Amino acid sequence: MKVGIIGAGAIAAKMAATLAGMKGEADAYAIASRSLDSARAFAAEWNFRRAYGSYEELVADPEVDLVYIATPHSHHHAHAMMCLRAGKPVLCEKAFTANARQAEEVLRYAREHRIFITEAIWTRYMPLSHTVSELLASGVIGRPMMLTANLGYPLEGKERIMNPSLAGGALLDLGVYALNFALMAFGTDVESVTSTCTKTLTGVDAQESISLTYTDGRMAVLSSTMMARTDRLGIISGDKGHLIVENINNPQRVTVVDNAYQVKSVYDCPRQITGYEYEIYACAEALRCGWLEAPAMPHEETLRVMRMMDDLRAAWGIRYPFEE
Image 1 (cartoon, rainbow, N blue to C red):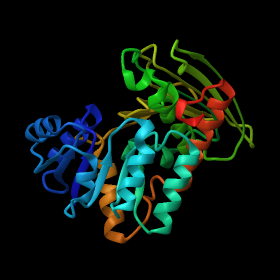
Image 2: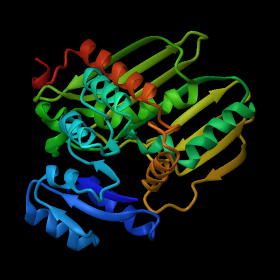
Image 3: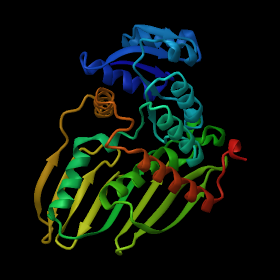
Image 4: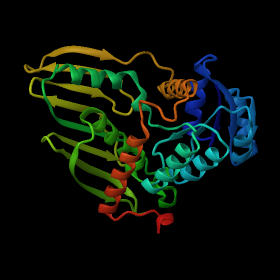
């Protein structure tokens, strides 16, 4: 599978390192940047075979089997549509688009033209995330009723997260992981959502607290911030114990604690290249099987999260300039 990347920033470099470590299971074929010099420098550093000074040139290359979109959130819709119109399968970084309307248009086009696309929310594809689901289903902590999760890094100096025109803010960059963590653990039968946030001087959300209440009484209390480095823990509590997930952004260890607060078992993350390899494996499998979506992240789940984030931003009074 020959992979082309559009956007040559830090996330693209992480994907390039992933492809290099996969040793032929996927081919680091092409990189495109808005600058040919940047693309050539990236290609030389990561051993890509083709370098393009425009995204359109990469998408037009008939050798590209899968396009990984590594541009800012604000550009995901346009770049995904460009790829799909060229008939290219797509792996699009989270957040999938800037809003649900854009996501609906992208996914409708992909479905109608039978082209594969999936969201690169890497935690959905990781083995340890599946381990958490299996542990909950096993009843090891009894009936799960309360979940807390947080994710935060000091990112105030980054243009992509501070600029409303780039669909900035903590929610689409960090809060999306906390929401996905809750939905993976507790499912989708959410009855109500309450939240609060603080804003930056540029008008995007700096940090937020979100509470999901489920129809059966379960609760998920989530927080994300671009102002602080948090412990990144996810804790799922039941009537017979609790699970501690270390780093909801890339789960490294799951600890099962019993009713006496004693460690019952520990599950460590399998050895990784970067963690991005699992979404590449999922794309390869889908393309081999002729699927239009990846089972680990169905299109309906992508839409669900995008709609939740739209509702949250609406409650906070946050709109991006291109949404006016």
